[in-house]
Length: 264
Image (tube, rainbow, N blue to C red; front, side):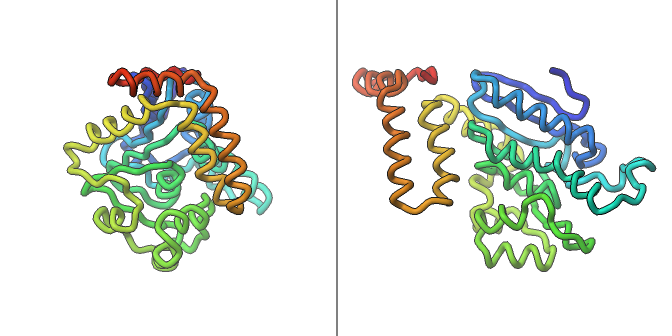
C-alpha cells in the first residue's frame, strides 16, 4: 500500500523501508508513527520478504519525535493518562521491529538521535558510515528516554557506556559506535547502500525457517536458564531437521552448488 511518510520497496527477498521526511530530518510525527506500524505488519505477513532494511531519506536516519513540527492541537497541554496512552504507537513501532520474525538491519545514513537512536537499536543489525552518529537527545531536554532506550542500549553497548550516554547526552561518533559493537559494519558513505544490501542479500538467501527460529531464541534465550534454552533449542532443531530446507541444504552441499531455500 502507498504511504505518505514512508517508502517501502521489495526486491529479491529484501524489503527496504525508508523514512521519507528529509525536510524534517525524518522526525516522527503521528502520521509516520501510524504508517510505520502498518508497514511492519505488511512486511511481517509477506513471505517473500525475508529481510527488512530500515533507513532514512536525505542526510539523517531519524531525529526522534517531531516536536518542532507539532500542530497547535498537538501542543495543547495533556493529562498524565492521555500522555501515557500516547506512547502506544511508539511502543507498537519498537516492539514491531524487535519482534519481527525476519532479520532487520538499520542502515544508518546520518544522525540517529532520541527516538531515532532507539529505532536503530530495535533492529538486529546496524550498518553505518562516517556520517553516522548517535545521541540520547531526551537527556538534553530534561526527559526520560521513553522509547525503550534504557532496555536496548545496555544490551547492545554494555551498561557502562549506556550509562554514560544516558547521563551525559553526549554524541557517540561512528568509529566509537563500531568499537562498542553498536555498528556491525562501518564503511565509507559511498559504499553504505551497496554493503548493506550485500549483507541483506546474504541473509535473504539463507534458510528462512532456521534464521527465524535463531532470531526468536537469540532474544528469548536472554530470559531463560541454560537448561530451558537447551530444551527449546532441541525443539527448534527438530523443526529444521524435518524441513525441506534442511534436505535442500544437504543436497546442495553434496552437489557443490548454492542452495535454493524456500522456507518449507
